[in-house]
Image 1 (cartoon, rainbow, N blue to C red):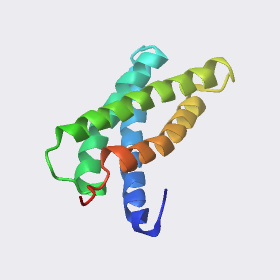
Image 2 (image 1 turned 180 degrees about the vertical axis):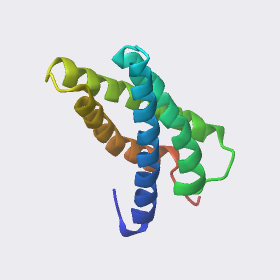
Image 3 (image 1 turned 135 degrees about the vertical axis):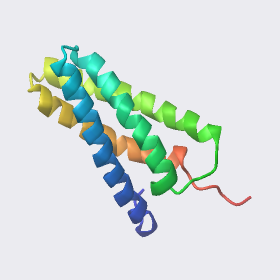
Image 4 (image 1 turned 90 degrees about the horizontal axis):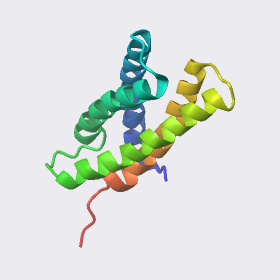
Length: 131
């Protein structure tokens, strides 16, 4: 999946992901501070990171400036699956493994990042193939 040609996009994706994670964690912490329930905070925080992710990955990481509604649909589909996936991991780490909240959030974010890159590179922003 990761070739020499895809290394620059992987590095950029990682940078954007770190920024998205910062946004995600900040919104998550703020909502918890304001009294929100963990899974509701997870959904709202993840959505904020997703908005930044789409804009930066489309224009910078994968350099796709075309206004393609298909990209947005595929991006939202991948991220809806990722939200479900990370929410299950977050819940499982807290309720089953009895991990501290911040460790559970870190585990969910890390696991989701790997699958998100694969989905983004291979499906959402895949290079158009010559016919």
